[in-house]
Image (cartoon, rainbow, N blue to C red; front, side, top):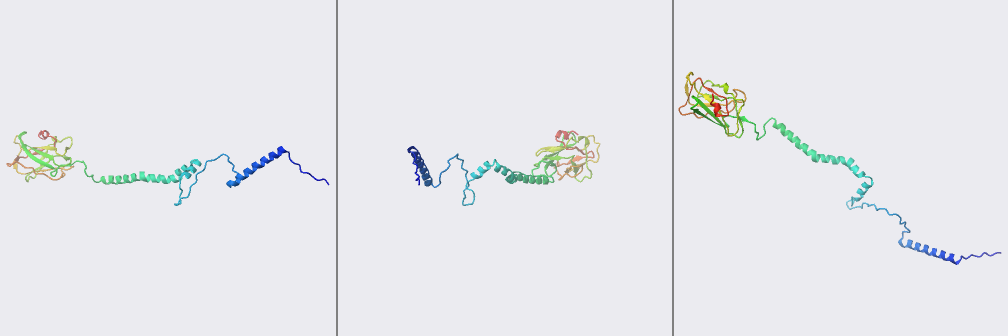
Length: 265
């Protein structure tokens, strides 16, 4: 019976095997020391931040959400413009357009009310009459048999002298006529402090008038916006103590803006 013999490796090969064994032992020892085994230290990738829980239940940092939005190619921004954008749009409208709309509605309402009544401080002219003017009556030497009526605006608004004054001496039962050739091109308007005038022909210079008498009291009435309508309170300017003589020729001019125009007829 043949007995087999074990073949021993040559000395160089034995040294190579021993060195390999030492290397393997060292690697095994390293793996056991760190408890994780051999790691593949390949190409590193950037760490993605994660949200950590906070006591309030929310995210401790918004970086993660921002990173996710950036990583998804702007989807977070797109969502804000579509889903949440509608809500934002409404809030913007309420903050800007809504307030303006409300103010506009109030302004329109106020304008509607203003259409029926003038606002305070309105500069629209009013009618001149005995309540907002000072009226005087004065006889003049030229032209002969003439009297000048002066009306001064004592109010705070411009007032209009319409048509001509309606005169009445004492209890006379007739109304003096107007001198049509004295009608002005426009209504005589008096700013506060300004004066208007009317000339009165008391009697015919050639004595052709009849029914002459002396007036002791004069009433000056004002016309409204239409002929022969009432313009408000009348005035009773003082007359000379001896009175004023007049006859059937009594006539009056339209209201004028100058004294010379009033005495030109």
